[in-house]
Length: 103
Figure 1: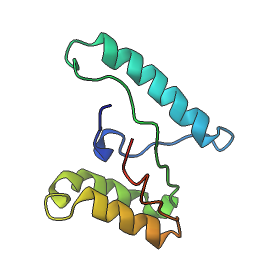
Figure 2: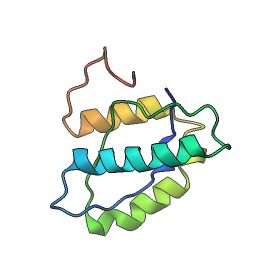
Figure 3: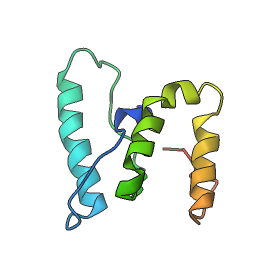
Figure 4: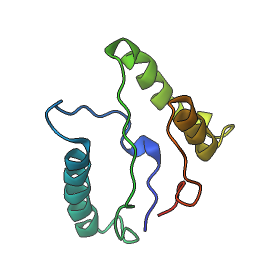
């Protein structure tokens, strides 16, 4: 499997009537076809099974966009796994260690 950094899909918008699972499925299917057909990505062999999606308030949009723009630099000093764990805990999501960031 191939790990794609979170900044690959920085901020997406979907209709409220579209289920998150269907939205992610459509993204994975269309991008998989493109990546597999593109000679610039010879190591791509598919997306991971797991994903995370978070909603945000429109008033926070600019703040999130600024964070994403600086995310690569930010993760030089704070590991993605640590930040992701904190985000999950902060939002009351139970972490099952046997599955955390594993494919």
